[in-house]
Image (cartoon, rainbow, N blue to C red):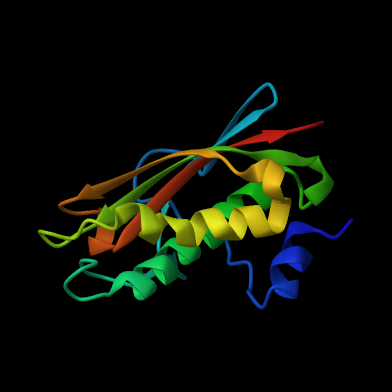
Length: 155
């Protein structure tokens, strides 16, 4: 089985380094077979890729790209937690997505699909997860999107 890095590369993406937390927390925490991944914004190398509001500075499709960038950051944390071994990942159980929205923007769930679709593509239909998608007034670094997730893993 490929590593998470190899599986991501096969889809045309590069797995980033785990972003440095913007607060006093860890990128992931494990409880038994559950791996809790801290929220990741759409950043790369400390720079917010999509600063601003979806529905103002960005359209829906760009919002989905921002969510996908968050998912890649989450995958970097996941890879670290399972030492790159994709076979240890059972499925994504739950995801929460937050979208920095302009007033009147109502397609928040469609934005978060950018992250959900990547996880399902990588880990299969078994990774179709429970999810919440919420529009918010602001996010760290004025990021357009933030996503957090819980994965089931095996030893």
